[in-house]
Length: 354
Image 1 (cartoon, rainbow, N blue to C red):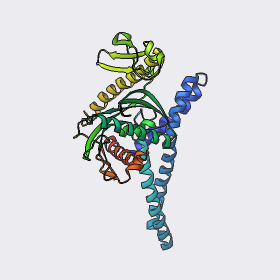
Image 2 (cartoon, one colour; image 1 turned 90 degrees about the vertical axis):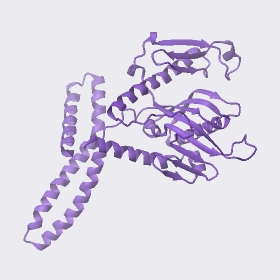
Image 3 (cartoon, rainbow, N blue to C red; image 1 turned 30 degrees about the horizontal axis):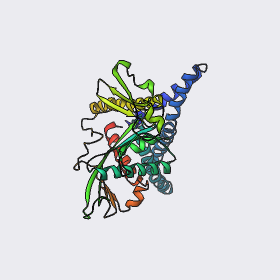
Image 4 (cartoon, rainbow, N blue to C red; image 1 turned 60 degrees about the vertical axis):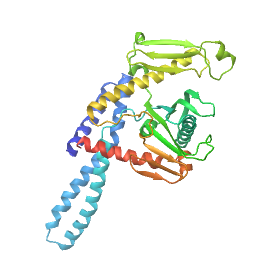
């Protein structure tokens, strides 16, 4: 099965070479073919090495029956090394052949919302935003806040922001779900530990051409912003609320000073949400047991718990804990993401029948 799949990839690679040569005057086609060819290059190179090793294994095995004892011994030693290399390459090739999530290379729109716990949940939402900001900084990505609804104590009822950078979605997609915090709130006078929750949604950025939203499917309301920004914001109706009538989805943006900028941001968020709905529908047809991305925010639903008294963070999906809460809140979350990515790859490999 593996060799058949590799043969198909090599055949497509050669075909792309031919198509590029035949369409040199069509720059758009050349760019598309070149991009696809570049994505297949690593597989083709490793495939050639793999075939070479398989051939060498056959040759070494044929020498095991040779009359020369020294030659038999050398062949056996060579065979052991070749089989080890073969297994290593086979594993790498299977990983490369797993169908990739087309969204993995995209920028990300993240939505953090306070769930159960009132002001304490809002404060923790702000801390999660800071954690993701630090993680983005570590990765060399950029953060752009699209919309925010602050609480009185410096927390967020909701904050929506974009993360721009190569591979952002491939890493941050594992952060979707309910995050639970256990600690003594700053507003708690009796010293009791409270449990609060925050929901995180991770959406891939969607280009305008990828999803068609008919104008008559939208209701667009404009109003005066109640947020920060001075007299200009309060005097003029710059805030925008867009309602997608078929689904009932509502997006509000009021952080920018111009109505046009707020409308553009709201449409960007709406496109990502609608795309995610379509993607969820498609994947649920392929996978019967598809987890919903974000729960209701109830305490019982959780993907990760941040326990302040014990300085422990536990990811319940993989049962992995870090006993350095401060480091996690400073953006060191790869301890969880690496393990989640490995598990995801193993599951997709099992499903792909490579």
